[in-house]
Amino acid sequence: MSGYQALSYWDLVAASVFLVLNAGFSIVLRLGLTRNLIISALRMTVQLLLVGLILKLIFNAGSPWWTLLAAAVMVAFAGREIWARQERRLKGLWGPGLGAGAMLLAGSLVTIYGLAGQIRPDPLWLPQYALPLFGMVLGNTMTGVSLGLDTLHTALTKGKRDVEAQLLLGRSRWEATRPATRQALRSGFTPIINAMAATGVVSLPGMMTGQILSGVDPQEAVKYQLLIMFLLGGATGMGVLGATFGSLWRLTDTRHRLRLDRLSGGK
Amino acid sequence: MLSVEDLRTPLIGPVSFTLKAGECIAISGPSGAGKSLLLRAIADLDENNGTLLLDRSSRDTLPAPEWRRRVAYVPAESGWWADTVEAHFLSAPDPAELLASVGLADALDWEISRLSTGERQRLALVRALQLKPDVLLLDEPTSALDPPSVQCVEQLLLARLDAGCALLLVTHDADQPRRLGAKLHHMKEGRLFDTNSPQASP
Image (cartoon, rainbow over all chains, first blue to last red; front, side, top):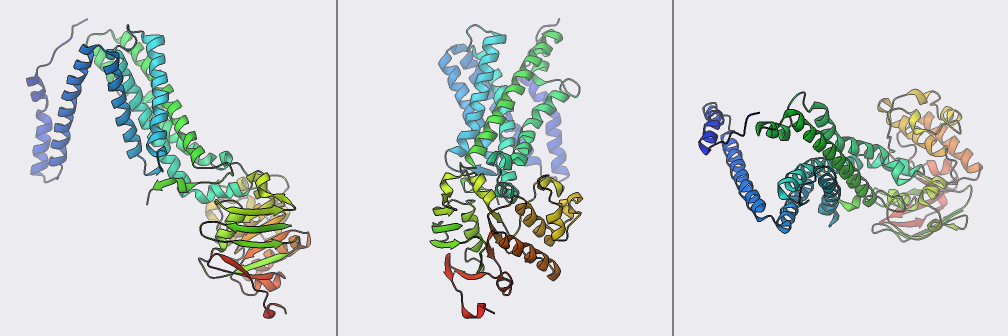
């Protein structure tokens, strides 16, 4: 088992050579991609360097409060992302609140369960474990929730007549919205299902690759990856279900009407 | 049978009228007068205020699905949520007879995407009639139909009226109210006016 190979900053500069070459091609071929390519690469560099710095500070501080603050910032960014990824959103506080709330509930529950039940760091909130795990859980739940909500809102808006046709035949709001609900849940679940199906065959998951690169036995790394995938699947599922049914509840009322007036956006 | 009192939404009303069993009221009026909105409000599809009674039971005391089964609204363009015609009908009571009466005897096996507008219009009506409603709210039920089909549908509606069903009809066909023996009402800027003018009687 080999040890961990540290990289110098010069190694990074050398690794970026092909990316710079691509930028060169873009200029020569007038692809117009140069600007985007350079900005994205620079942005990524700055973001990651900063994150590395902040994580180091938090790890050194060893304080549950700083850890909690970092987690809160992650939730805020992920919540904003869910909001931004929807073409049509719930009006009022429901718009940013519902998606972020479902994600936060499902994500925290699963993260705490995984930390307390299986990973068992000491102390439980140890940022080296808690933050990366929470980040992965949030990232996947965020994708699922935003896809589920976006699909649901579009399906209900475009299928208003179909939903109302069922309502008019005396069906409940839950029955009448079932086709849209099914579509939304399917779309929210698809990324995690695809990830589980392709994992290990097409690509090695990032976390497992990282562990193997830092010298962990592959079989141990696989166990860790499986644990994470189960947690991710569980959190995504609960988040998508919660957000979809929450939004469905908000977009209908007790007189079994479809309330698209509580939705804004979309052209 | 159906009594509507002070029905209003932000866009229409107040509207009051009563509809007796076996009676037909035909509403005419320019586009945008609120005719469809009135039918939607009666069916409780949009938020609205007012006192609505069906045989003395108030709409507020009935769950919305039950109200809509008894006071059936068929919009000008209905929705279809599945791929086949059959999926939109109940298996009992057997819709075959109703379908045959509007000239669509073997429509159950068809696909929705291949239906013409007129076929959809007749199927939507049959779909609502299958629930045996007490009151029918129809929004231009024959607008896309050829004359023989119009006749089929009107015969079906007359038979329902004879059986005691009440009918509220929005129509642009000037002669249809007479053929159905309907009272005439006119809708303008969200208000409903009784216009049983002399020329309506034959």
